[in-house]
Amino acid sequence: MIAPRLLQVAALIVLAMMRPASAQAPLIADLDDHLIAITTGFAGADVLLFGTTDGPGDVIVVVKGPVADIEVMRKERVGGIWINRKGLGFQNVPAVYILASSKPLDDLLPVDQRAFYQMGIENVRMVPVSPDDSDLKTFSEALIRAKQKSGLFSDQPARILFIGDRLFRVNLRVPSTVPTGTYLAEVYLVRDQKVVGAQTTPLVISKIGFGADIYDFAHRHSATYGVIAVLVALLAGWMAHLAFRRR
Amino acid sequence: MTWATAILDWFLGLQIYLPIAEVALNVFLLLGLGAGVGILSGLFGVGGGFLLTPLLIFVGVPPAVAVATQSNQVVASSVSGVLAHWSRGNVDIKMGSVMLGGGMLGASVGVGLFTLLRSLGQIDLVIAIAYVITLSGIGIMMAVESIRALRRSRRSMAPAKLHQHNWAQGLPLKMRFRKSRLYISALLPGGIGFIVGIMSAIMGVGGAFLLVPAMIYLLGMATGVVIGTSLFQIIFVQAWVTFWQANTNQTVDVLLALILTIGGVVGAQIGGRLGGKLPAEQLRFLMAIVILVTAGVLLYELVARPSELFSIVIAGGGH
Image: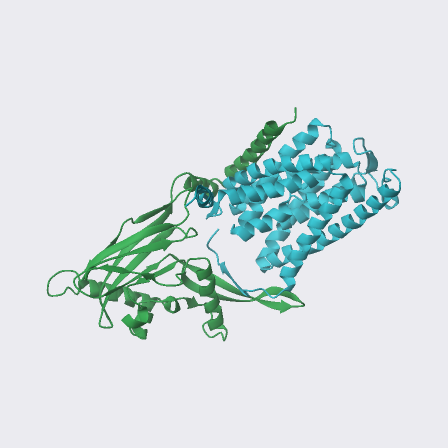
């Protein structure tokens, strides 16, 4: 299932090289910040995506996070108790999927085009480990439902606002539970049911500061971290005793 | 906006990012959880892990992190608890050390069992069933015992008799535990420590809610030293579990443990002061109710049709 992705990248490159007669890019877009730092106070973030087009048209934005393999489990009743019985695996599921558009997607592009560019929750590409399973549909729907519930997949596309014909902007909400990694924001310009311009821009989400130091230390020097955790607890307990000792 | 809602907004907005749990949660929610469980521990002399672990998972902490961090927090709360009991001479070190020997051995076995069950993919189910069985057993036993004691004390003010242990008189390795006022085989407290060690590793709790009733009802220890002695041995067992979890799974969140500890010690003070004003048998009955309600909720979750049948697991990656 690598091929469709390659095809898509190729399409992006071709689109990027297809300069119109005016020798200007049909679409220029950028983020106000390419780095989201997860610090101790991190409670999610808003990223402003803005840009201009070379004339009237509509814009669709797709942001995808790093991919991971996921196992979906279904509970079944066994002897009166609900137990995880059946599991189905999915590969290359994006950790995050954020969608924004200037008009409802149905009005902008035909179904096959939306599927090709992975526009819309139903078009997010997930590779099933056992593609012939009869329960595949219910399991993949459950996966999307779980992702939406945790805020990692957009429920509704965010609305892209146009200022005049050419200038557009949208606030993209990044939830607090985002995994770290390199994200890609794909921006598409659509005219007459066709994608006529595209641009991608990276977004890096990483841990920074005190929290990141703790995380690093816990993973690199696990034994020392364990000893420190115990010592901190002993000290905290002792200080609590001193603070509340009855005289 | 009035000043009241402004303050409320500020409170609700005070999120803190937990570096190991990798989620942002409200500081006051976490402090409140710690305090609530601390009050229980001050009242009943148990760590409250059997309530705190499910609550942490409920507010969004990954289960593996909740279990491991809980062990770390138990170390802190047990230290402050044991020091208070120590200053009043309520710790039987000899008894605690014998139980500790069994406890370390049991925790090692429990850790092995935990890994095995996880590889079979049914650890959550086993944890839930273990909770339902042990909690309902202990809860019923305590409720019956305290009701009986309450009736007795109403008829006559005579103190309850210590338990007889005819069945255990023949065991070897007899030791004198002066503070506990017992002359029994070391195999008894060692065995209890061992079994509780296994349970505490699998269930991710300190195990006081198992230890305290076992020490009172099975060993027949002098009740005054039970809580201090159980805390004494829990410190060492949980310190070891914390180290092991941090070393192999990297699931101990020091920041989360600290916040819970701060809430917990304040709550324990409140609980301890409340506890001094309430009679012991009523307290034991209250504790039995808390335990039975917890068991009931867990049983309901096992039996009732879940609102969501599906759950997702990140294979290989994640933590």
